[in-house]
Length: 255
Image (cartoon, rainbow, N blue to C red; front, side):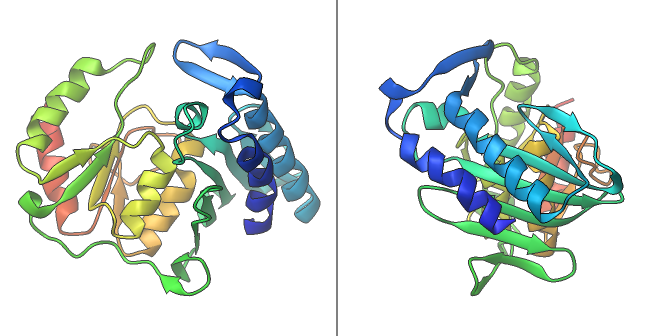
């Protein structure tokens, strides 16, 4: 999975910053797809299909491709943080998760610019590169915590709800950050760089890898009702075991 991510990232790294050369088409309001994005997904599809023939493949660009092996599915985002990429902001990632019988069992989130390689295997922990074991932050007080989130953009619902949630959260924490790549936000929760993260209306490929990274780093991930998280759910809250219920309480107070 790491090899596949790095192969896909080579093209992204070449195109990064060369905005005038990018072929850009609009998929929808505020949602852009680039030629680099499509090439990266093709590279992932080819590498993963060669490594594990028959596995199903769910990608942001090509959707679901059913394989002969119904128990395994790759869940892939070739470029999470497309808008950052388009603006030459070096905060985006290649995202790969492996699902076995409905459970995420392996995950890779790779930043092609910083070369941060976050990975996890179920029951074996979460790691940065080959040496650093990841642990969620140990902070237990809301007023000391730094949280990440995502802001609904053009064409997405939920602006009013987000503002109510932000009001409930922001007056009780040391800061709220919106970096524009949910996959990296979740990896940063696993690494203890962020104390927690919440967002609504995400897609499976945005969160599948991060779900395993956070839980293998000792954190908790649920939907915004506190129920066990499934990648199809879309609404997510991730944090350490102490902060998680406190964040949920504030989000639910937003109504």
